[in-house]
Image (tube, rainbow, N blue to C red; front, side, top):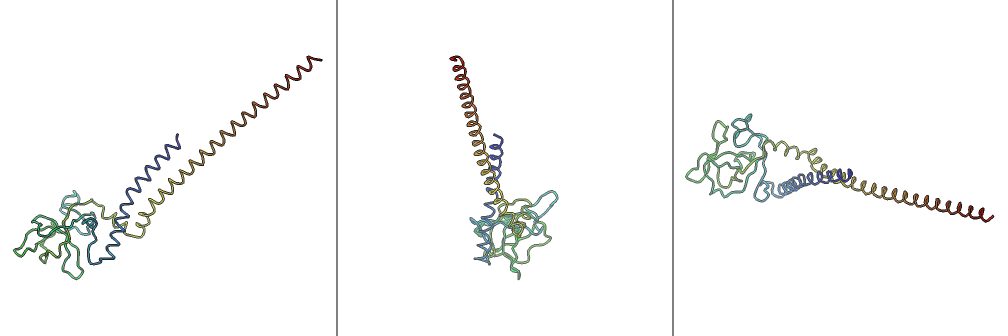
Length: 223
């Protein structure tokens, strides 16, 4: 019963680990493949892209975790029709600078030509250039606080090893203990069978000894 309980716990842990890590692995692989095939575009999955925040331009008070999001957060942007955007929306766009920086700021006004004026909530000034429809990548839809650092870790060689190794070790551990349980069960059944055979042999010897004693007594009585 104790072995079965331990095995069940291991199975549950393994399933949880696989359920957690497998989607992360699949998402990372999808992002990597899409990044290779379309290097000039931000890879999206189901029209949604995860981004890691690397600046405090949207942070108001990081200590109290106020503001739309903070440096080190993992945010999600969803593909959007730029014509539907309004003042107050937070958008991600590709900057016109030489690096083609990816910026996620809030729309503070919309010009007559349809371009957007944007600004980081914490930035002292407005972004230099208006944002056109063509530059818009998506609209901010949510975040996971401080998960960006973890996402960065998983992009490093050590993180990839952990990402792939943890569920693999979990599977191997479950398989090992499953086989060990089966082996212990077979050994236990074999031991029980040998004990039963030994008991039967002992009973048979006792019966033969009793019959032999009875026979000797009968011969002595005849004499």
